[in-house]
Image (cartoon, rainbow over all chains, first blue to last red; front, side, top):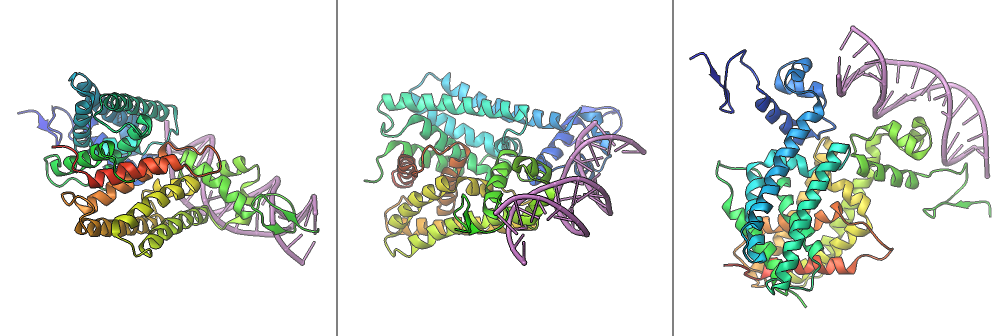
Length: 206
Length: 206
DNA sequence: CCTACCGATCGGTAGG
DNA sequence: CCTACCGATCGGTAGG
C-alpha cells in the first residue's frame, strides 16, 4: 500500500496531513465556536497546528471556507423541500415530510447548518445565502397556504408568518442540540413534528 | 429655561450632541447590522459622526455598551417570567401570559433582544448572559411540566425540549420582524400564542 | 464650570 | 514580513 487513509475516509498519496475536507471541518467548528468574523486566520492556524500560509495551500481565502460550508447546508435543505414537493401528495403530508427530514439534516449536518443560520448578511456572499434561505421559507409558506385551502390546517393564521415561525422552531435546534450517537435523533424529530403540526392544526385557546 | 431636552427626554446643561442613551441606541443598531465583534470603534465613530476618542467620553469600553444592552433585555424577559409566576394561576395560564408578554418585549425592545439572542459566548460577559437565558428557559420548562401534571398540556413530550422549542419559536421573531408603528403587534402575539399553545396541547398526528 | 468633543498617538494584531 | 487597522488613552478645546 502506498496510500494513506484520512479520518474522512478519502484515500490519497503525498505528504500526510490535512486534506481540504479535514481542514474545512476544523475551520467550520472554530467558526461556530467563536463566530466567523471573530475567528482570525491566525487562530485557525493555531487550531489546525499548521502555519497560516499552509492554509492557503488548501483554500484561496477565508471566505472560500465559508462558501463551501454554506453551499453544503443550503443544498441539503433545498433537496429536502424539492423531494417533498415531488411526492405530489396532499400539502399537509409534504409539510410533514419536510419537518421530519429538516430535523434530520440539522442534526446530521449540525456544524454546517449552524454556520448558515448564524449569518447576518455582512458580505455579498452572506446576503446570497440569506436569499436562498428566504426562498425555502417561501416554498414552505406556499405548502401551508395550500394545506389551509385543503382544510387540513387552520386558516386563521397567516401562512407566511406560520412558515417563519415553524422554520424558527426547527432552526433553534442548533442552539442547544448536541449529537449523542451516530444515529439521527428520532425522538426530537417526532417532538418537533407534534409541536409544529399541532400548532398549525388545532384551535388551541379562546 | 436654561436646560435643553434631548430625544431621550433627559434634561441637562453643556454642549449639545449625543448623550449616553442616544449613543447606545446608535451603537446597538450598528452591532445588530454587522455583528458585535465585526463592528470596530472606528466604524461606530463614523456612524455617530464623532471621533473614536469622543465615544470614550460616554462609555469606558466597547464591552460596556454590550453590557448595558444585554442587561436591559435580560431584565425585561426575567420580569415577564417573574410577573407571570406571581399570578399564582394555573401553570398553563401563567405560560400563556409569558408567551404574550415575551412577544411584546421582543417587538418593543427589538434591538436589545436581537443583540442578546445573537451572542455565542465569546467572552466572560457573553457566557454570563447565556446562563441567564438558560435560567429563563428552565423556569418555563418547570411551568410546562406543572401544566402537564395538571392535565392541561399533552404529557408525551419532554418539558425541557418543549421549553427550548417554544423559546426558539418566539426568539426567531427577531430574525424577520420589523416594527411598523408604535404599538406592539397584537396579531403576531396571537399567532405565536395559537401556534405554541396549540402545539403543546393537541395530539396532532398519528 | 459643565458636558461633548478633538487630533494625535500608543502597543498590539489582523489578513495576506 | 508587510501594510492596515484594532481598541484605548492622552492633553487640550469648544459650546452653553
